[in-house]
Amino acid sequence: MKITLQLAAVYNIIWGAWVVLFPTHFFTITNMQAPENLTIWQGMGMIVGVYGIGYWLASYDAIRHWPIVMVGFLGKIFGPLGFLMNYFILETVPFEFSYTLYTNDLIWWIPFFLILKTVHEKTNWKLTA
Image (tube, rainbow, N blue to C red):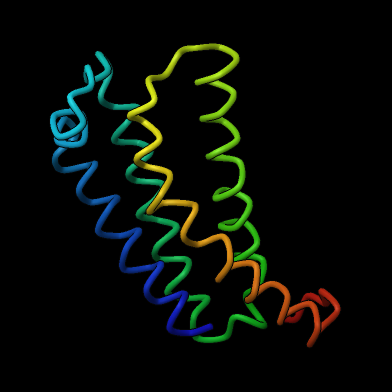
């Protein structure tokens, strides 16, 4: 659990910093039109980076800090669902935007699920101080 959360932490901090510091780079490498308001995109980068700090802190005791893992896991579920809704139903986002989902969300589904499964087995979801 510790290694998984620390890898997620490092990844999120690097990705978040990349988006904040170089907000047009993702759009350049995917040949997508950058949004007019890059502040929103950079804000997403900041949030992803902050999640990284949370994962790092949770890595020291994932059992105790399982709510941080749960919030991260939910974000990794709802992000792709939001993409699917915007791509298939609202048709407001190009397919190329899905590239953010593979490394930000999808690869973490199983490891985060397994962490939460272990937490449940050991605590039955009891919050500890």
